[in-house]
Length: 264
Ligand code: NAD
Image (tube, rainbow, N blue to C red; front, side, top):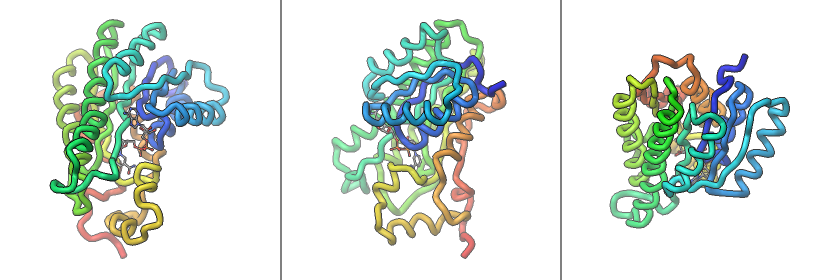
């Protein structure tokens, strides 16, 4: 028995680090998955990888190009699952951290809007259409997981104001949705990852040792997190094992947000 047998899931940003690792685990746990992303090449590569590493998967796995900042795209992805029996799990994972983001003076207006449109509106649209699907199919339970970040919990002197504000909004909207829909059985939790070994951050840091050390030193474990470590948490939040876990800021950070001085 898989932990997600007979569940239908949508993953946004499925072509990226956390998204793909989560899809792979979802398939291993028996779910059918619609992989969505704004990037067609990323999706093609990701589904090939997922099929390669989970060759004996029995359910469905499909891809759909979706820009989460466009409501019509998100709605189309969710209604695509009507013929599967509707959505059970929605992982609103797609997000950007734009290289032009910065402190209050540096962050350009258009980068602020772009970040909010993807990171906040994208999560809102995903949540809204997941609830509509759950209701349409008369479901008595559902799990929506929205990706925030630990920068929504602690301040950083390496500023990315639009990104930080967007992730704070994810925490707040997820908490409220969790309370509003609790009696319908629809759970909403936020995932708060620490800095990870995925293209999003690693491409930005590149070979810059100083930039890298500035972050690494704050990890009690002495290392960045791995996408798979986030994916494992998502599987818990998606499964019925977390049936009484609702409205949490689920922090997966190797202890970073609880640390003052880290080991030498
Ligand atoms: P990633 O860059 O590897 O993957 C993100 C994916 O989202 C990419 O495949 C990209 O094509 C897709 N995407 C971008 N804009 C989109 C849009 N408008 N619509 C649909 N898809 C879009 O990033 P990741 O590290 O896997 O990050 C996943 C989530 O985790 C993000 O929300 C990110 O903010 C969050 N997070 C990441 C870190 C980190 O250090 N990497 C830390 C904390 C939180």
